[in-house]
Image (cartoon, rainbow, N blue to C red):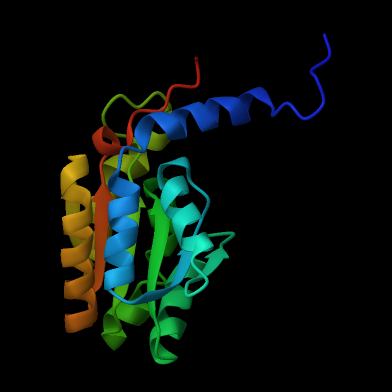
Length: 192
């Protein structure tokens, strides 16, 4: 059976359905917090949990957005942004946090602010066993190298937590991560 031309592959249709289900209003509220914090550079590894936020940032001509091949590039970009006079945010999924640990030494030791928004996997209602190890170890891994970590599970608390984390990062020169829980973004279900 041949699919009609222009029909997205099944996995893309499932991803679109998932994104529509999980994006209540919090991505727009977080975007407003990033604007208020003066964020001008946004780096990200594409992720369904951040998709609405990424779209909003990409649509803003005052924000430079960069799609990364690996998360540690975002740490370096944040360092360069700050040294160049800009504020930056790194968007990633918990599975990529392990890639950043060695690179986090630079901003942490130099007391350069780094704001990270991490959508969590390997938590509530996870279907993929490969997501469990890093999902369960994300907070401990970040804290072990000196990152301040603020987990949030309720959609209404995400934007205020991001605003507070941005204030903390940019006023104290710290690496700060907001962990957006799987309850807030919704559990992925590829069996629909």
